[in-house]
Image 1 (cartoon, one colour):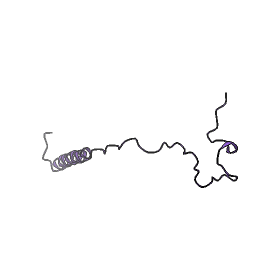
Image 2: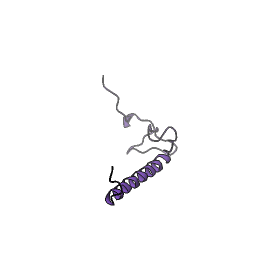
Image 3: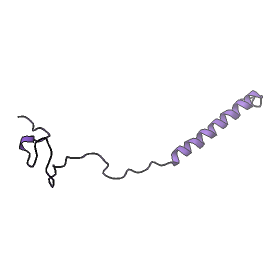
Image 4: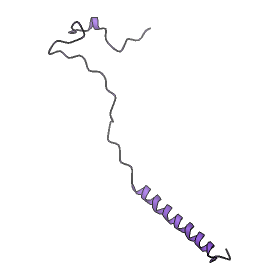
Length: 78
């Protein structure tokens, strides 16, 4: 069993003129269209990147403070 080709045979298409044109008032059948979204997509939250930025900044400041404290000898017993 063979599958039917996706485009109709031009010799059997009604209202098709020689050369592939159509007379005024006739339109060829529409093709199926699968592009586009079925519904709007939600926007991602922007709170999480800001939270990560703040937490990373706090961690960097803590590590820098520890390095400075070790460099000046303020934490001899640690």
